[in-house]
Length: 472
Image 1 (cartoon, rainbow, N blue to C red):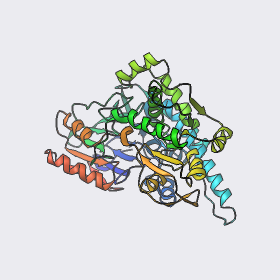
Image 2 (cartoon, rainbow, N blue to C red):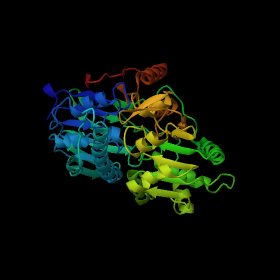
Image 3 (cartoon, rainbow, N blue to C red):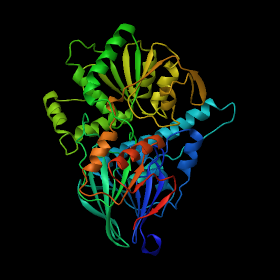
Image 4 (cartoon, helix red, strand yellow):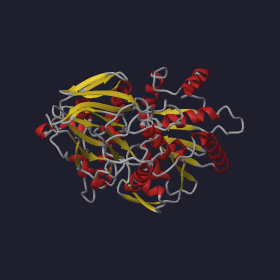
């Protein structure tokens, strides 16, 4: 496959003006490479439209280059494979280990949520079909081709790719692609999701020296984060409050990275005698399995040096005497009848599926419930509606009054903020010909574009959905 007439071009088929569903098609004279294949997460009707229909023939790309294992970057792979894609899916070994968990869990959630939705809507005849199932997830996993960090791979004729540490989550990578353009050799860097300079677990990203085209996330392009150093004190205050009131604290958390960061924070707090030991339940089979992958790679290159030292002293930073990992449905359901105080960490992070929806539908109407948001909530998701203060929300299609208090703790963010992004771009040895801002709502992209322009950078583009740019 190739771009017509020997040209090179990139088309943005997702995460263009929004923060979900990353899919970018890079076409050169000899190849067609799909950078990520993410699931769009948002309102059901819009999500179905965007996820069920590919804007290119599914068999067209020669390969998929995967930045990391978050569902908004990998979750549409089963659909792609089920619809005819048979090329390699190239990712780091850590990402490959995580994908076997993420995609199978996503398939089961698709099937389970559809089954439950159809059950409660049996009387009105409204039904939905899962986007894909375990069969399609297995098809996608069979295409995985793991690589080592920094290893040069040749995904298709005339293209060479390297996976560089992005510092976002375990296994996350920036993808560097070298190809021959019509005017000579060119290099494109796709950041995927870029990590912060200061993060609790991961090694921070390091900019490569030489880039012609930069495709860069802009999730927090107009904001700065609370310092990660404030995590422990904020959580400690919440635990003391919960002990006094008997509150049930529900934490919708991404099973990959955010759950592990929170678990490690509670592990640290157990050493403070002033902090009450409230039961912690990790109610997500996926998060339980992913934590085992973290343990497997604990001595690897991805983790920050300070965290590795802490893990060595602690012995098991993901386990302590008042934490319980919940696997079975029966154990999960039993939590609804347990009195507080308690902490429930459950996926999904944007409240768009999984067990957290059942905890919310059972307790969102109770004043003694705290819903703690610890991750980005994309526009259109239930998490964003709660965060925005809506007093009535729909869960599984049924309306619920919101009496619970909804709080946000931004300290955990694993996305680079404005200052992190500017520092990263300034770390490049020469200025890119073009900078494409993706994975950001328009307000954040606009703010980042202004900040980059103020630093003297030109060639800044904010691509729209489906927009194509020639790479000269």
